[in-house]
Image (cartoon, rainbow, N blue to C red; front, side, top):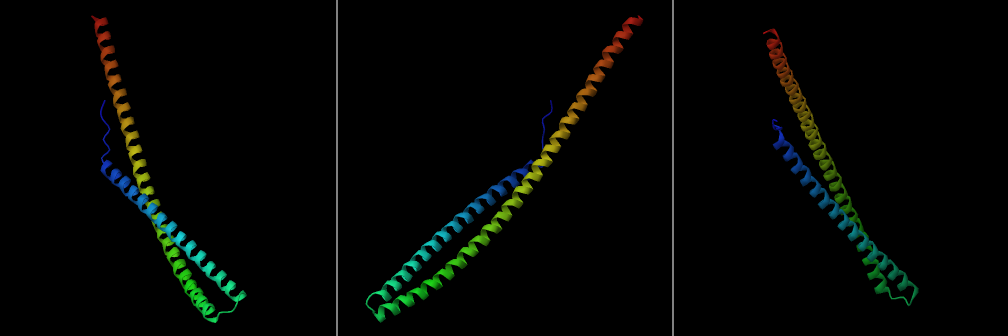
Length: 152
């Protein structure tokens, strides 16, 4: 039996490699987003601690210098929260872009796999057709020889 040889196998392999790269890129972006979200949680926790410290300072003996330092620190933490939100937003956009590239790579690979499957189905059909033709020729030859012997 003949061997099936898909002529675009190298393209299919390339598409599989590209898909794997995009999956790895997506995983890296997902990890980066998780890291930025962890940083965001830490910044928010620190900001909450500063706010609580400010409340505690106002409820105890009033020390204007410490209250001002606390207010400055609170403003700084608010800016830090804004910066971190921006970083999380950028990481989310990067993740979305990586997801789209990964989906595109997956679709392209699937297209080539379908093309390979169809080529294999055509190959099987051609092989079956050739086998049927060969069987018909063999049957005709055998039948022809039998009728030739009967006439003698």
